[in-house]
Image (cartoon, rainbow, N blue to C red):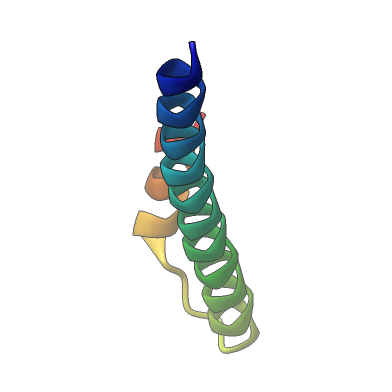
Length: 54
């Protein structure tokens, strides 16, 4: 049972890091979209990226 708990903690750690990285990428994309919106430009791929995460 102890090995299972250790394995689960490792998997949880990996998923936690992946989720954090995905959140960071999404925050950067949204920030880029806002900045581009100030200059009347649009990032069409950003909407596609956000649709994938749903």
